[in-house]
Length: 480
Image (cartoon, rainbow, N blue to C red):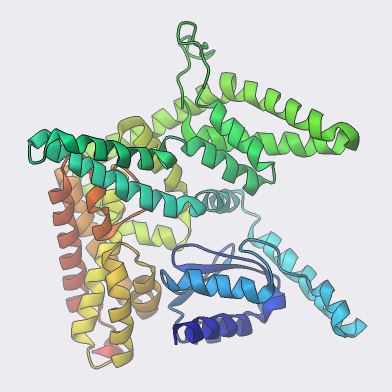
């Protein structure tokens, strides 16, 4: 039965986006099938939203169909299997139709439609800022499962370490803590390498070269007795200086240089000369230029954010909790991922994440209020029942796109609930997370410095705030 649902969703999504031939590429994140569309004129958004099992549709740099966690993996895999490609690979173009008995007129019309779609897509992505957000998303979205799994394992290790210190469990447990930390560090200790590889794939460079540039920032092999000089401050370089912000910029430069070298180096020696020159030039630039500059930028950025959160208190928390979901809708939240990682690298925690997690908790409270006030609307209640469990665990998109956003007013009151939760976190201060990925109740094991009680109180405040604001002010008139 489950397999039939997956196949039906895959087939119906294809039907409403203009067919398999209208899809350029397909991939997925935790809740959405993301498609690069050739011709948007062929997409029927209303019918796409009406498919049973589709919780919402987002038009951004890609067409994103919200299906929900777990199901999205299976539907995306079914769709690429139907197309005979892998996730992220280009679909067969309309030109392959020549072998399918199509007339010349049909091929010309399809080619014209494809060119029109490409021009439209180019125009859509003309904003440099939007292109940056898309690249950041493409670099870090594939790493989210690793952040989630390794982060939770690290959280368990941290809880066990606290129990050892408190004497609640014996020191013999330390070896288990060490093993868990080894697993956790598989992603966090070598994040620069993964970022370099993904950045190279995104910018069209050789992934292995991008990984090497990420590794360069770790300064492996540097003589501790004669450290490399920082040409800007007069001090010395330290491993990881500039963080992943510097890695992304360095790999972008690497991609530009590598592409140019491929054009001018003879094919017979290209495999030897191009990677050697590329690594030497960009490696030196990374060590002596990019790392120092990116270090100043990242340090300043983290310092400013921490200062705002420490001095802004409840006001800063309320503002961030209130506005985070609108940021998500416009894709602006992608820029926060490298900031989170820099904060963790420099201070051991990100103070932003617990506050921003309150936005999803506000959606939970709003959904509960809708359930109570609109319980006779069986379709809405069933949607809420299906989306609430994952919403409590921090995956809010099913609630956002399937429940609150389509109704309008409940989305606003849910954001208010998120602001109330953020204000509570801000009032406590110094409530941070040791890793990113999880949110909602799933973030509790990752809260640093034993501040989990403050975080739980923030969650409860966001639930209550979202519930009360929606119960009294957020019910659409036609549903009362």
